[in-house]
Every structure is written in structure tokens, then in C-alpha cells.
Image 1 (spheres, rainbow, N blue to C red):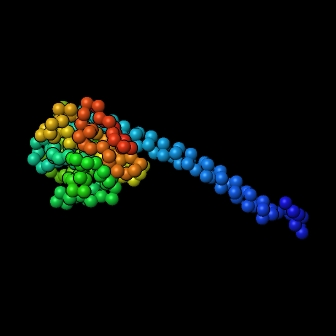
Image 2: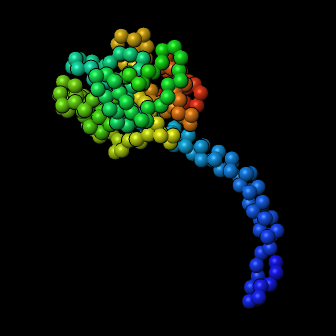
Image 3: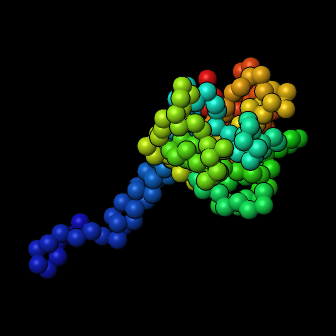
Length: 223
């Protein structure tokens, strides 16, 4: 350093360049580590959200004797068949069986895929927070509000709108449909598409005695 005319110290151009080079090297070394910690935190948050949703769904089942469902309007079992029968944690704009939602995860599965772009989707808040499946005003689609098996929600104060990667959590209810081969398991699955935002776990893969997610998907099973 050199002394200025007023007696103040200043940096030479060479010293500034050296400092910037050191800072750049530190950023290059620590950046991936910091990003890794952030991503680990996101994964833990998604796992926690999935577990919290699973607990809320289980509480509703204990009260009502029914798992969340897609109302099909028949007033009987309420379950809609199809590999892509799922509920969302964010609002879906649905009309005539076609749904569009900016938070739908990409579908990267093969074989029997989720096909979310043309699914009949539902916001799980309509069952966990309010007793209005599919936003229904038709009482035969709602859960009972009195008697031994009554809806006593809300079962969660607030839902996570999306996972940490800005995609909806899905609540798969396909195996609740009596017409599918897996219905005897009676499991509900909460799934996040994970960091890559693409569903890599097929619905069938989840319907086994010990469901294991594929890729970086994050799954919570409601017991």
C-alpha cells in the first residue's frame, strides 16, 4: 500500500487484483458446498411435508373411515379409476376432465404413466381443510358431519402449496379404486417429483408391499 496526499492508505491495482482472485477462488470452492447444503435442506423439507400430509390424511381416515378420494358424482364410493387418479396440494383449474396447472410436475414415467395433463385432479385442501370434495356443494359427495364416522377437520392448518422446487405434491389415490388389482393394499401415497421436477416413479411401482421411489422422487406412505 502507499500513502496518499492526505495521509490516507490506498490499495494498488495489483493488490486489488490479488484480493479479487482469492475471493473468486473461495467462491468457486465453497459455492458447490453451499448449494449442496441448500439442496439437502430442500429434500428434508419435502420429506417433512410429505410426512405431515400423511399424518393429516391418516387422522381424517381415523375419523371418517374413508381415505381422500376423487368424487365421481355417484354418491357411493366416490373413487375415480385410472392410473393418474391424484390429488394436488395446489389449485387445479379443471373443466370437462381436463386440468391445467402451472405446478404440475413433468411426467417422465413409461408404461402406465400419470398423464397429469388430462387427469381429473382435486385439491386435497377440499378434504383436509374443508369438507368439500371437488369443491362440491352436493352433500352426497361430502363426508358425514355427524355420527360415529364424522369429518372433524380441519386436519391441518395450512398446506404446503408446492414442494421446494415449485411443483405440487401429489396424493395418489389410484389403489383405493375397488376396480384395480392393488385395491386390497388400501394405501395412499404422497409424492414429490424431487429436485429435477420430473415424476420418475410410476403409479404401479408405488403399489407394492414396500414401495420404493425411482430417481429423486420423494414419497411418503400413509399407513
